[in-house]
Image 1: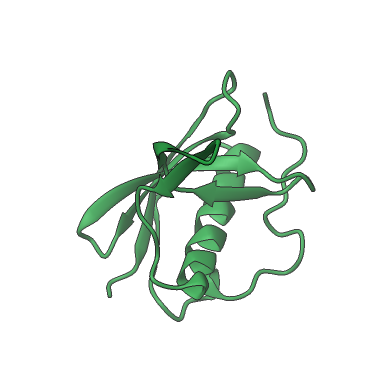
Image 2: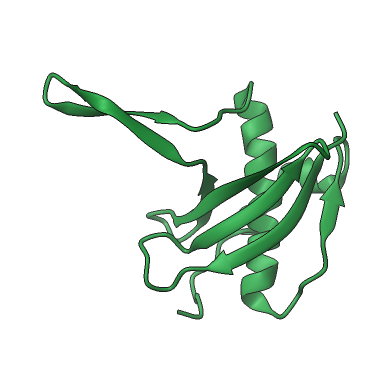
Amino acid sequence: MDGYEFLDFTATPNEKHVGIAKIRIDRRFMVRLKIMNKKDGGLFAVSASYKLGSQDGKDNYVNAFEFDSNDERGKVNHFVIQNVVERLNGPETKKQTFTEGTSAFGALPSGTYVQTNLPF
């Protein structure tokens, strides 16, 4: 595995979500993730989902893609949110690339990616 590269973030002030982040995985394909607000004021990244139909009166949705473990999903979420918050806090535009074992994938201290004063 070659890692993840943060490519872009686009704020979406007129939508329910905060914005769209674009990452490259293993130097092979690009993925767009919706950045959503948590109820506690933090942010998290989610993949697109598709409605498969209704069953027993409930809508059935599946993710467009999934990571093979919760650990990997958590690492990517921390990496993406860290980059999104940097862009929300300033005009930072440089690309960042992290591979397994760098500090970006480690556990972030509580509040590191919490953003409550969004610019929109």
